[in-house]
Every structure is written in structure tokens, then in C-alpha cells.
Image (tube, rainbow, N blue to C red; front, side):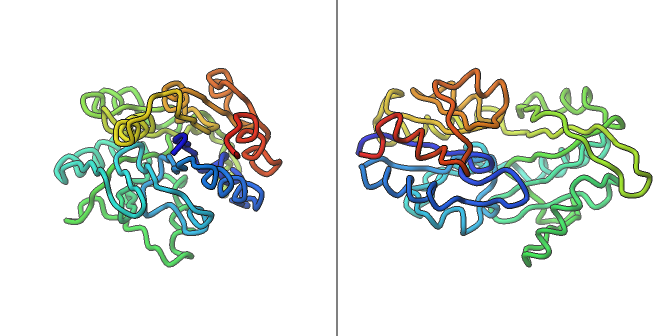
Length: 277
């Protein structure tokens, strides 16, 4: 074994656009890196059920999912963190009261709050239904639960109260601003995307767990990302790579900025760090 390589998904392994494409040359580069003796892991904010088969198809040694709350190696679960159902229900109602529209993510299923009249999550709900992966919308259901959550807020949201309510046991990550145009009134609304993970858990904590598991130090660890939620992982790794098109903060934190994933960026970076032979 040579090194541990950790890869974000969106914008790193696959294109961060409507294509969601995993380029063939990127898959080939990963295969070559593994053949050279490196261990390759997906390291994502997505929970396990939201990592589609086409993403894992090129072959990985394992996955760090849900911001470090779930760790898998060669199909075996090494670690899993769970939140009590009571706390899950409580937090879901805080989201509703603060008008924070959340995508509640559990290892096995994803939920949303159908009782909150905000439109931002509806495309994701429709997409899941088209994939025959229903997303339940009842936050009071007995089986409602999550490992972490992410979502949207706008000018009607009480972000300050929301952050106060969760700060005891969760970390808030601001993923940045985007524009959304209403299909009904045509008015552009400024919204922002956020992510929430349990205190003590992150993409970096997942890396740390596997470093201890395999007995390697930081110099043998490489992190590939593009977004603000990759910053902690990139700062913790011995070597960090940001994809072209990544956030300015991510680029500033990286040791190396490579090309976009659909422009040969993964191969370029792996070759730069001599991880292909």
C-alpha cells in the first residue's frame, strides 16, 4: 500500500452540472492509481443511499459518507454514527419554524418536510421519484431519521435562530449563494445552500479514522475537492488538490489546482503527484 486518496463527488469525480458525467479518462486514472498500490476512497457529504452505482462503478476501495458519519471499506462497515430519533424530530421542527428547507439524509433513505411551503427542494424530490426512490415528506413519521442534513434558505428564513438552536451538537457550513427564479411570479430570489453535520464529524474526521485504521501519516494522504465543504479535508491532508471551477477558498487552501474533471483534471493531478506508477 502506498497512499490513501480521498475524492469528493460533485465537481471532482463527476461534472457539477446537469450532465453529472463521470468522464471515462477520470475512471481510467482511478484504476491506474489503484493498480499502482494506492487506496482510493470516495469522501462525500452524501449519505450512502445517495451515492449512485455509476459513481462507484469505476472501482473504489471504500467510501466515507455523510461527512464522516459512515465509513465503509471493501463492503464492510467500519464506523456508523446515529442521532436519536427524538433529536431528529426536534431538529426537523426547528428547520420548519426557521424556514430552513432541509434534505434530511440517512444512510438508507432521504426525507424532506412536505409541510414547509418552500420550493427549492422540489426538483430533488421529483428526481428521486423518477428514479423510483421515493423521498418521504412526513417529519413526524415514526421512522423519520437522519445522519446529517443540508438544504436551502432565503430572505424569509431565520438563520440566526437556526444556528443558535443547533450549535450545541451540530456544525453549520455555508455552501454559498445562488439565484433561483420563481416559475410563478418571475421574481428572482436570492437563496443560499447550507450543510449541517454532527459535531466531531466531517470529511476530515473520516480521513483521520482511516489513517489510524491503516497506520499511515498525513504525508501519505491526498484530498481532491472543489467546494467549501471540502476545506477541512483539504487542510488536514498532507497533499490537497482543487479542481478548476472550485471555490476561491478551496483554491487558496490547495497545494495544487488542476483542470476540470471533464478536461482531464484527475489524470493531470494524479500524474503531477506521481500516483500513477
